[in-house]
Image 1 (cartoon, rainbow, N blue to C red):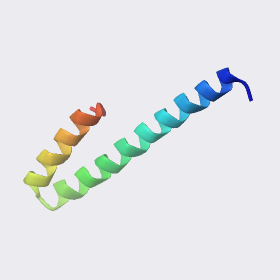
Image 2: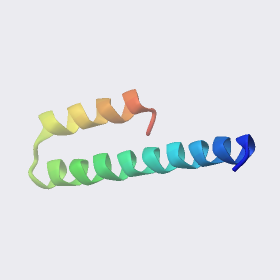
Image 3: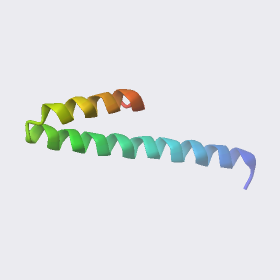
Amino acid sequence: MNIGNIGQRKAEAAANHKANLSASVKRRMEVARSNNDTNLLNVLEQEMKQLGLN
């Protein structure tokens, strides 16, 4: 495996990780909305912003 492949794999892993984080937070936001939990929803919206997922 050469260095270019390693860099590409790291970038793919980072993109996959970010997608998984986004999906997780979005699921949590859906549950917060369904429970009318505005406090949790606000926290999760801030988390999305901090993670750069918005």
